[in-house]
Length: 402
Ligand code: KDG
Ligand code: MG
Image 1 (cartoon, rainbow, N blue to C red):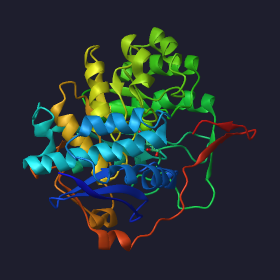
Image 2 (tube, helix red, strand yellow):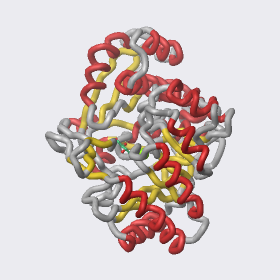
Image 3 (cartoon, protein in one colour):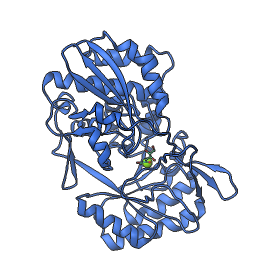
Image 4 (cartoon, rainbow, N blue to C red):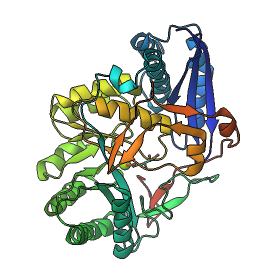
C-alpha cells in the first residue's frame, strides 16, 4: 500500500477545515483532520510544503515509523502546528490501514470496550430561563450530560454563550472580536447558577463547566470549592493551561474533578499532571495531539493513574477528527466522556459520516476505516475565509486569557 499522493484540502462550509487526503496505489483514500482554529493556513503550509513531499512513495502501513519520522525527523519537536500536521498524517494512515483490513478502525485499536460513548452537549444562555431552555433542548435531543455556560452580570460577551444553536467562537472577521472579562464578577455569579440548575434538573444529570483558562490558581481553588455542593462532572481549564503547576494548588483545595488539555499537544504537557494525579480528565483532541498513535499513548499512561479521557470535540474538530476520537474512545479502557457539538448542514454536505448519536451515546459505526468521506466538489464550493478566535480584555484594557 504505497502512498501515491498527499493533498491538502481547505474548505469552509460552516467554518474552515483543513483535511489531508492520502491516496494509495491500491486506490484507497485516507483522511486526516489538521484544523487549527484561527491559524488554519499555518498547518496547510506545514503539510503542503514540508510533509506531503516526504509521504509520496512511502508504505502507508508503516504508521509508527512514519510518526517517528515526522516527529523526530523534523528536529523541531512538538507545538500545535507540527502536532496537528503529524496528527493528520497519522489519522489518514489509520484510516487507510483499517480500510485495507475491511474493518472499522476501532477493531484495529483493540476492539470495542463499550457499546457507545457518553456525549456531552453545550447548553448556554444569557439568563437563567434561556439557559434552562437550552438544557431542556439538549435533553430532548438525547444528551445525557450537559456543559453549562452563561453570561455574567456586567460583562457584555462571555465565552461559550452562543447566539445560535451552532457553537462557533471563531468569527469570519478580519480582526479578532474583543470580549470583556472580570474574574470577581464571574466568581460571584457562577455558584448561584449551578445551584439553580441543580434545583431545576435534579442531582443526577452530569454537569460540566469550562472556565477557559481565565482564573488564577487561588481563584480557581475557590471556585472548585464553592461548586462542590453541585457535584460537577468536571471543571475544565480553570487556569491557563501552560502553567501546569497551578493545578497543584487548585487540587489541594477542592474535590471538584479537573479537566485540562485542549491546547496541549504532547504527552510531555501531561507528564506531571498525570504522575502527580492533578487532573481527572485528559482533554486533548486527536487532531491537535499527534493523532491516534500519540493520544492513545497519553490515554494509556493516564489510565495507570485512574485518569480518564474527555476528548475535545467542538465544531472546530472536523467530522474526520470527530470520527477518529470516536474510534479511539470506543477502544480505550479509560474512556470518560466525549464532547459532541453537531456540525452544520453545509459541513455535513462536504463530509459524509457513518457515526451515530442515539440516546445520548455516540458510536463510530461499522464502515471500514474512519467511516468519513470528503466530497471534493462540495468542498470546492466553500473556499477558505479569514477567521479569528476572539480576544479578551479587562475593563482597563489589559489583555486577558480568552
Ligand atoms: O478553537 C477553540 C475552541 O475549540 C474552544 O474554545 C472550545 O473550549 C472549548 C471546548 O471546551 O469545547
Ligand atoms: Mg474547553
